[in-house]
Image (cartoon, rainbow, N blue to C red; front, side):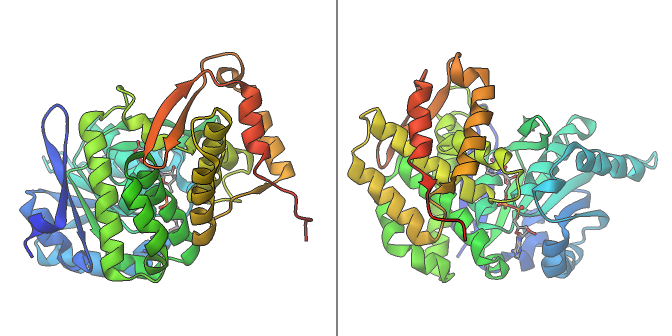
Length: 375
Ligand code: NAD
Ligand code: GLY
């Protein structure tokens, strides 16, 4: 099959764009894919210890075979804790120290999950007001969502993803085979963003997931390819129409994320993965939709069953919900301002709703209280 046939293309609203290559085993021809895309210069690699330990050798061999030099490797501690300004600064310091007075071109290559991709994208956006970068996503979440669309950034103690930029990659290369080494918890977490695509845009894709999620969890090549490609197609189409989230179209991709981010923050970013927090957040958003009589209860039930079947949390302990609510109450937007939530009118149809009565949001959170005794 030709590369084009295996790729999804992101066409940006003001011209330009980039391919997302989705293939089983394509890491071996990474260097070749870079050449085809006319990526020039030496590579500055950003990765994390786990990912680089597993795939660093294959990546380096492929780049060397295609004639690329690796100028620097910055290998992070795995996890959300690395996604901060200190890491961003370290990467920039290393880039500056590579300067030797000679004109040389550098591109950044992010090999890893959403953490590496988000930081690396922001480093690329900031250095010399922008250098080219390539995303090589190795988690399901990164392959279906975070590596595509140019949202880059880091966390701040004041909030998640508070500092960042929209900055698009030159190329995304998703090797499905890398998912074989991902632990099941991360695989389940990534599936949330796939379910989200079905929920906001495509009821038949949601039904497909209901029937096929066990094949994804079993890493069946064809099914994995299908869900990654469909998710990327939908995301590419959305980014192509509303790159910078200015038209209320891209906003729909935030379904479940307001509750989800609050849950992550309230638990110190350690108790739940991003995907797990978004799973509970999606149910809170769906229940808010039920309370506002936008969504029939039986559709909420289908969403809950799918997330539960995948093995994601659908409830959280009382202490946690209380902390989430406290965090939301401190946010003036929720209480007095025009809060904004992505809600569902049906499976496959979402819309942004503003000014929701906080007591409705509180009820939606409380429905997801896990009253089981703590063991
Ligand atoms: P992650 O990057 O922390 O990766 C999860 C874990 O999996 C890490 O421990 C990592 O070392 C390990 N890992 C990665 N690939 C592996 C592989 N192939 N085999 C074995 N282990 C592997 O987490 P994530 O879920 O990929 O990304 C979460 C981040 O993405 C969050 O910071 C979130 O805010 C961000 N995000 C960004 C966007 C966006 O549009 N930019 C969208 C969604 C999420
Ligand atoms: N993950 C949300 C977005 O890319 O807009």
